[in-house]
Image (cartoon, rainbow, N blue to C red):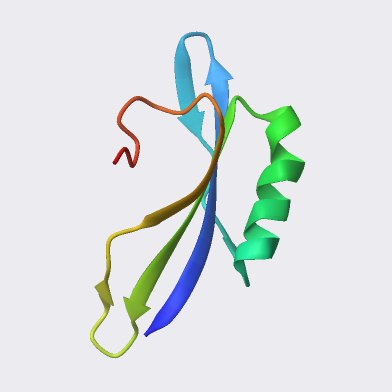
Length: 78
């Protein structure tokens, strides 16, 4: 299993939040640094990790690491 660290940023467009392309980071620390860099320019940023089994292409449930600002309702709640 390998761990993927992902950063999802959102732009505000009127009342809608528009997702930027997901960015992958090499570590949790780098993902957080990317989120903190993007946060002043975006409505919201989500950092999460996900375990993946490359041989079987199986993905575990994502684990939220950091939430900043406004995110779509229900996005990885719980």
